[in-house]
Length: 445
Image 1 (cartoon, rainbow, N blue to C red):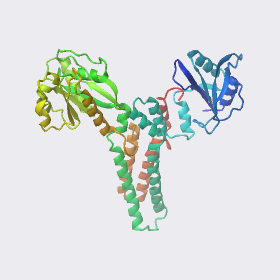
Image 2 (cartoon, one colour):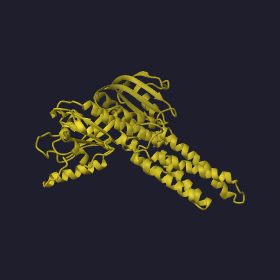
Image 3 (cartoon, helix red, strand yellow):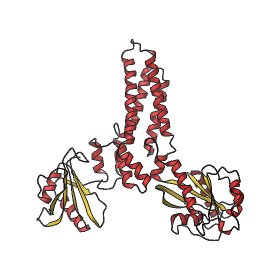
Image 4 (cartoon, rainbow, N blue to C red):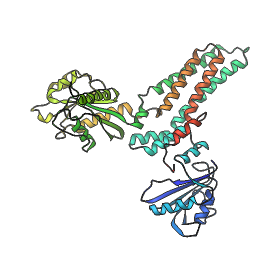
C-alpha cells in the first residue's frame, strides 16, 4: 500500500487525448521528474512539456492536474497527465514512469480500492462506479449513477443507525436489570424492529429489478415451427442472427442477442419450435425452449394469425406473455375473433414480419412491459446477489430478535443484523470480499 501506482485511466488505443493517473506519496516526485513543475496549483490544469527523466528527451506537450491529499479521488497525492492519445506517446510516458523509484503499475481497480480504504466511498458506491463504467443502456446508467452517488449505502446506513438505537436499549436492559423500563418503551422498541423488518421485506420484494437491469431482462420467443420466430429475432436485432428457412425444425438451440430496448438492456432468445418430434436433437431443442420459457421475465408467443386460437391451447400464454399474431399479410381480412376471446395474455399484437406491419406497436408493447416491471421508481434497489443475501440474513436475525425471550439473545441478533448491513457497505469484516469486488475493474480505475 506504500507504493505509488500509475496507469492509463482512459481507454487504450488511438485517441485525441489520453489520461495517465499517478497516486501515492511519490506522485509529486513523478510530476517534477517528467515536467520540472515543482509546485503546481491544486486542481488547476497546467500546461507542461513532458520529458524522459533519463536523458531529457521531449515526450509530449500536454496538461497536468495536481490533487494533493486528502482532497483527491484516492485520498492520496494524485497527479494526472493529459497527453496526446497516440499509442507511442502513451507507451513512452508509461515507460518513463516505470523507471522512477517507488512507482509500480496499478492493478485492476487499485485506485478505487485505495479510495475505499481511505473512506472516500463505501463498497456500494464502488460497485456503482464499476456498473457506471460498464453501463450500455440509459436505464443502466441511471441506476449505476444513483448507486455510485451513495443512495443505496445511505439506505443501509439509516437502517444500521436505527438498529444501533435498538441495541442501546437492550444493552441498557442488560446492564441495569433492576431498572424496569416503562411498557411503552418496550413496545416502541419492538415496533421499531417490526418496522425495519417490514422495510427490509419490501426492499427484497422488488422483482429483482436491480439485478435484471445489470444483467439484462430475459425475453424468450416461443411458438410452433415456422411461425416466424427467427425472422422476428432478426427484425428486432437488425441483423441475420438466426437462420430462417421454410423447413420446420431449423432452430435446434437457443439463440441469444443483446438489445437496447427503450434504454433497458434485454437478452432476447429465439428458441426451437415447440412440437412433438422423433428427432432426438430437435427434441432436446424443445426441452431447452421450455426451460427458457420457465426462466424468462417475459415471453413472446408467436403464432400464425390464421390459427390464432391455437395460442390459447399452448399452455404458455399467461400474464407475462405477449401474443404475437404473425403473417397477417396472408389474411384477406383482419385477425378477427382472437381480440374478443378472453385471454390471460399481457397483450396481443398483430404483425407481419414479412412487410413490417405492426412491428412498432409490438416494440412499444414490449418496451412498456419491461418498463412496468423493471423501471426505477421509489427508493434504491438491490443490484447484486451479495446485497440480497446480506439483507435476507439481516431480516432473519431481526425476526429472531423480536421473538427472543431474553434481552441478551435479542441484543446478539441485533448485532448480527447490523453486521450483515455493514458487510454490504464495507464498514465491517469485508477483507475477504475486496479482491472479488475490485478485480472486475479495469486497470486505471
